[in-house]
Length: 75
Image 1 (cartoon, helix red, strand yellow):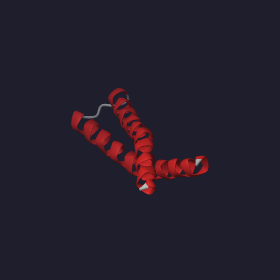
Image 2 (image 1 turned 90 degrees about the horizontal axis):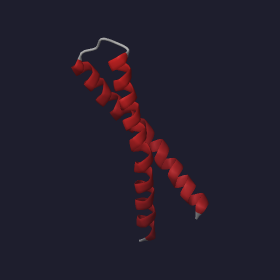
Image 3 (image 1 turned 120 degrees about the vertical axis):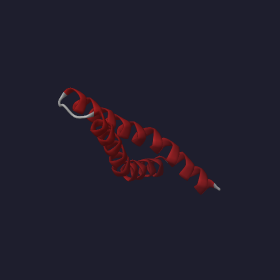
Image 4 (image 1 turned 90 degrees about the vertical axis):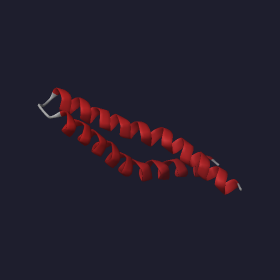
């Protein structure tokens, strides 16, 4: 039972870290394409979604492993 609680705690702490990273990267992309170029709205939105998903895929395992490591060292 304790293992499940630890995994749940890791998941809850991790999502609070990697989700804002991904959303932030997507918003930065949207702002950059809005103010730095003449791109159609569909391209900007599609690129924003793509950047958000890719940054989520990349940041998720990195953040989860760091949070697990941090909790092991703590407890």
